[in-house]
Length: 298
Length: 315
Image (cartoon, rainbow over all chains, first blue to last red; front, side, top):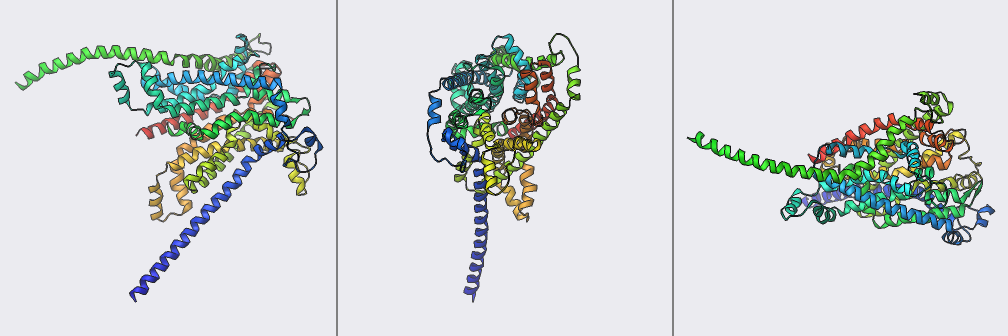
């Protein structure tokens, strides 16, 4: 009799476990299905970009059949762009501006973050708050006075003005991330370095930068993304095609009046989004760390 | 006796520490000088290209169109009386508030869904869901423009397949407003998802176990455990996104350029049209300065939230 009781108990437990299990499975599959729906919705525009970029102009202007599918895929648009001198120019300008911006921003923000996290000086607290506030000032608030200032500097329609202006977008957040990473390095390390006779710059170069490498990568990715994708400043300050960068170049060059060469525009968008996507594919974790750093690192 | 011995020792110690103090002071002074020098590039950059332009904008906004005479608050008065500008204020607020609320809700849902699935699969899904945030906004907006095309476009073709008539997506005021908001939601939701997911992961599991023992159901867990624990991050993210959405330029500029009948203009695009394209710099400066109060308001609370959070982490 006692055996049958235990048996029944086991059966009940198994049943309960089963129903719990089933509930959990439902929740899991429900989540997957809902996520799948979201992923499809999010990826519709990139998919459509790809499809259009593979169509010839004739296929687009024929306007027959589903616009979502390509009937005769060809790389003609890509080939056109790669051999198109203006597009090469935009690409080169974007690369130059971005590399310089990233270098300048990283030097400025690493030095400042090192100083703000370790060497208290008069007003350093206020300065770190000020840096964060600067991050919250959007470019659309400043582009009109900057138009005058850039004009006085003689840099209108010269892509070097972007090398000056883009760091203002990248530096505050990079400094902010780096302060977080540097503050988490134990002070014993600097003391050890000081006792060994290291100077401050040596300490920064040999200890802080290697230890805070993930933060530096995250900040670099952020600076890269900002300067590659910025649109307002180049649109307002550049107007000839030898000075333009990709974001404005594509829009002003491939759209002439009412003629939209959609195949070429979409191919150009793909080629221009390639560097951020590649970097993101390889360094997603740093990218995410950089995004959330503002909130979780303090 | 004990007092007698302790006094000189104390005196000696204090003398010694005083001597060390001056050395320490020198040291600290040198240290602070180096610190200041290291910050100098940052200070110069911010002072020249953020702080100075901000004050210069205030000065500019008080000049007449040819920038020859001082007109006080005339530009602001002129703008406020203009019907187009009243539309700009309405549209900016509608755009920012609707988009931020939708992004927050969708981002929260997505973060919860992601939290449900096992950790090793999260990376792939996260990678796919972050794509809208990674593509430069100006470029992905071009694709949206092409999909909203009135004649032979992606969306209208689908509608036709189901027997509906073509919709003039960007040609009618309220539909165009909806389209700009939709693009912004598409672009910004991944950011909310990432922030909320990070916050969800930081909620201790014990709290859920304790509430489960107390007999809480899923809704109660959400309202009495998850939301209070995430309150700070939610408010920081929402306020931060409010600032960037309010100041958004790319989407409206590319999608509609303010059209139809100026119904989709926001502060930034209107300032661009007035200040750069029509050449009325002071009026453009005045227009963009209208953003300042709401930005300052949001920035104040963001900063408060961030300092609070820093203290929580330090504690």
